[in-house]
Image (tube, rainbow, N blue to C red; front, side, top):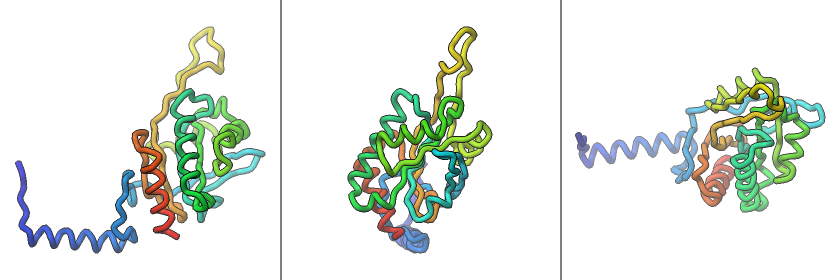
Length: 204
């Protein structure tokens, strides 16, 4: 059943919406990606990074963060995502200095922080690779509603030969660590570039 609304009521609703958006600070920005402002928690983590150093969300304050979950031996999704995000940073030009790619491995049994950092460095020097123990990864994945599963090796298989499945998506946080946007695997490099640039400009 269709519900009709009068022109006056519609104008009033739109005016209220515009005031709300202005109050939220988005200034009626035309986002292409999913706007998740207020629907996901702030960026918050502390996980081992390369060289035995801990990396935390505090280290990324002042930077726009592109977060995604995967693993270094992923055959397709992860290298494709890294290549796309690298292209986005290239498109951003000088603004790229204000952006960090954060790659969190859900496969801590094979991925050490040093392995991860070497992996992301092959794509972009503005990328950071981190992982942790099973509980740390599960807690962080749950925080952002990320699903993943590690298949146990079958009897007789190499202990390091197993499959990992994980959900796709890039979570984008502003320089204050607020969750702002979510990109799916169908979003183009141009769409990502446009919205990340808008976010940087909006929060600068």
